[in-house]
Every structure is written in C-alpha cells, then in structure tokens.
Length: 235
Image 1 (cartoon, one colour):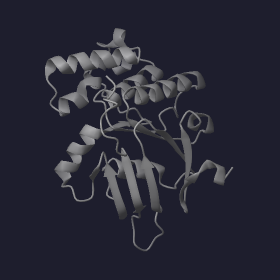
Image 2: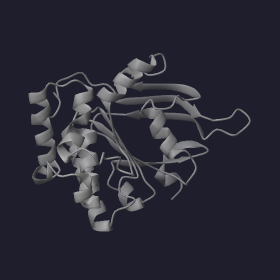
Image 3: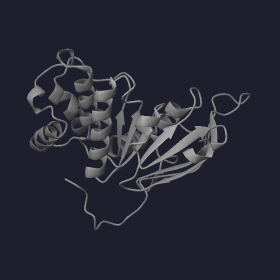
C-alpha cells in the first residue's frame, strides 16, 4: 500500500561532500558529491565507465564506507552506526536491483521475493500476502512456484525487481538493470521499476549508460571527476 501522505516529509537520501578513494596515492573515484533525494523522486545517474557509478551505489547502501563526507538515509546518518545497525538499516530501507539479477536458483520465485521479508522477521501470513501482492504487480503470480532456470531473462529481472520492492523500501538502487535485455523487454522493466517506486512513495536511483533508459527518470545527473551535475552541462 502507498505510504501515508500525511506523514512528515523528509529527504529519503542526503549526501554532504561525499567522496571515495581506495588508495591515498591515487585520485579519488569521486569527491564532493552533494545530493538530496525526495520521496517519490526517481533519479538517473550516467557517466563514463570507471567513474565509480556502481561504487557510489554500494556506498549509498552502506555496503562500502565513504572516504569522506556524510550520508543520511531516511533521516539517519550512516557513518556513526555500528556494522549491525547499518545492516539493519539497509535491510529495512534499501532495495537493490543488480544487473546480474542475483536471483537464487535453488529457491522458487515466491521464495526469492519473500527473502527480504524473512530477513526482517515479518510474520508468515503477512509475508505470504505481501509476496503475492508483489508478484501480481510484476505479472508473475502464475510463476510463483517456478525456479529461475524455468524463466526468461525478462521474467528473472521481474523477480529481482519484486524482491527489491516487496519490503517497501525508502530507497531503490538499480545498477544497469536492463543491460542484458532486449529493447522491448528493457522498456517494460524500466516502466515497471518506475511505476512500483512511485506506487510505494519511495525514491529511486538508476545507474545506466543508456540515454533512453535515463530518460524514464525524473531527472538525469552525470557523474564525473567534477562530481554530480545535470545532463545539460555535458549535452
């Protein structure tokens, strides 16, 4: 169900002077990033290979620590949190859609989608209801008991999207989610991803090399050595 529109408004994500480098004797992948992402906003980030787009998503999700700067996710600063608290915050607030799917082959479609709810210790009845609702939303209710090897690439990606959204995360991070799909299927997946983010009143960041994919977002930013900037700066 959509979130209560009467709830207090606060940014889903805020970055302050965010930077990442792996070695002190080398240039940073990125630095000085400033960003505020509101509920309901869907953002695309483009950039050349090697500028750190995927690394940025890992940092935003708390999978990697930044080298500089601060991150607030759903009003809570990630930096001061313990590893366990950061993991819990990620499970609760973040949905990740990977280019490589990462759908577990030994689980059914329904079991894959329900996994985030299990990790959050949602009760069995509620878990079954929300999983069924999510599978309906992505058009996979008939495949609930199928395994990944029995699905097409587009169907597997729908499973990945359903799994990323089933716990109604505040922030959805999608890393080249259509890179291995044909144009027709890619268009369907992008529309589904956008519609589901909006329906759950969350926010989303899409990493992509495709201008066509990026134009499904509300706004487009370019990541380069100078930081994040609107697409018009390089057009």
